[in-house]
Image 1 (cartoon, rainbow, N blue to C red):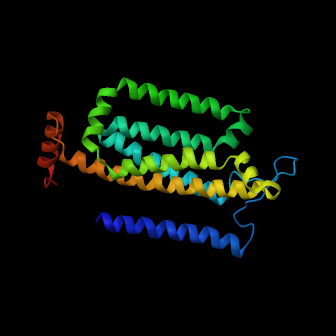
Image 2 (image 1 turned 90 degrees about the vertical axis):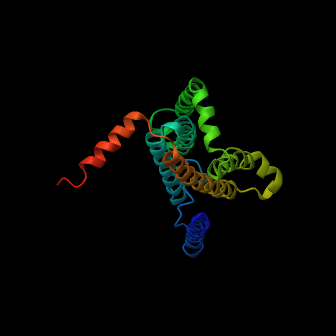
Image 3 (image 1 turned 180 degrees about the horizontal axis):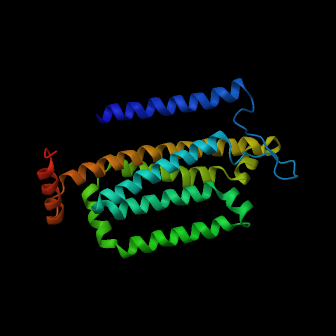
Length: 232
């Protein structure tokens, strides 16, 4: 079953990347890569380009899955909350342009700081529950993939996408648009790994919850449901 899932991940992501790249090659400009920054002549990625929409969609799915885990698997709630908070931080970063333009410059940094503070405080307050939850689920292919996606997004895409690095490599041939495009596709790769990790973690958390002993209240509730079956 796991082999089939990973085959599906590969096929779906391969189709997505092929479609995005082939569309831009066949119809230049369809990905809305080029746009003006206010009245300047600099080119940049549109903040609502198809690539950005795909990334936001991936983050939304990740957040939804982690919220379901936190709601339905109490024993995994601290871990689900932590990774859900990280997904929220990614989302805030992707909405940087809109937060700054609609509210104020660098407002997204304030929102990000608040979100990270809440994540840290919650995790520290539930440190014991977190350690127990981690012991139940580790080793975990889902968490491994989440960590790998985090590295790609927070380290490779951020550091390799630095303008100074590209200027040093390309010198007089430096093109801001090419650097930005490479950075966005690298982020897409990271979000893809993060999405696969989230799905795998949600599946593993569900398996763990089905094996955990039920509380007395849960047993009584399950008994009442069983007794009411077939009455009508």
